[in-house]
Amino acid sequence: MPQAKTKPAARRFTYGDYVTWPDDERWELIDGEAWNMGPAPARQHSLVSTELVRQLANFFQGKPCEVHDAPFDVRLPKNKEADDKVDTVVQPDIVVVCDPKKLDDKGCRGAPDLVIEILSPSTASRDHVTKRRLYERHGVKEFWLVSPNDRIVTIYRLGKNGQFGKPAIHGDDEAVEIPLFPGLAIDLRLVFPPLPRVVKESPARYL
Figure 1 (cartoon, rainbow, N blue to C red):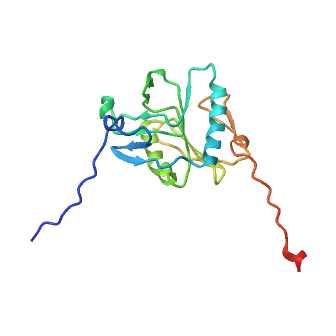
Figure 2: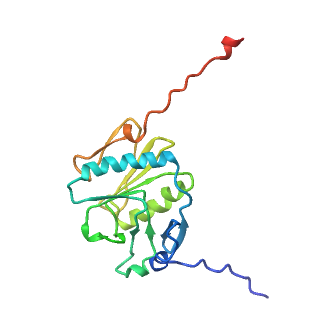
Figure 3: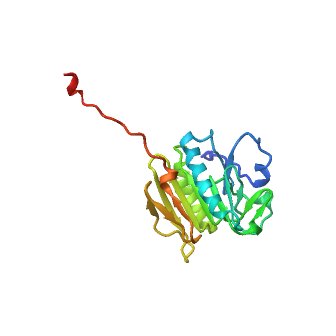
């Protein structure tokens, strides 16, 4: 009986491959699998990102933590392997890194303290599932999922057991305090600008 053909295994990549790819393309590696980040995000995505970075940067001015927005490479090694062997490199929308030993000219090696991903239709599923598990596994202390369309922020915080607890969900009219950074509160009223007022008119006046 002829042997069934098996699908060839997809090639696995490392940071050593990643640094050779074109500068005008954006990719991420998750456990060796390459993910094309697609076209530039929508305008609303950019506005939300800019406001979050502004509030974070203002708070951390003069403090040891650094705030970075994409594109900014975060290498997540599994052990102590050399950079060119690392098989996970992501570009979160925003990170806060407080350990200077993790920072170098290439970006960050190791888990940031805070990671923020701003959802878009092309990446929402990966951010919600794959990246949430990835950040939990590597010890990210706090992970935000920001939805410009739904105007909500979902926050996961790492527990003492090394796992994310039940998510906290915040609406667009709140100021969110971050216990990880005492004194920091993000004003979501500024992150999500007021929606334009829509005036609805009844057709009765024309009848």
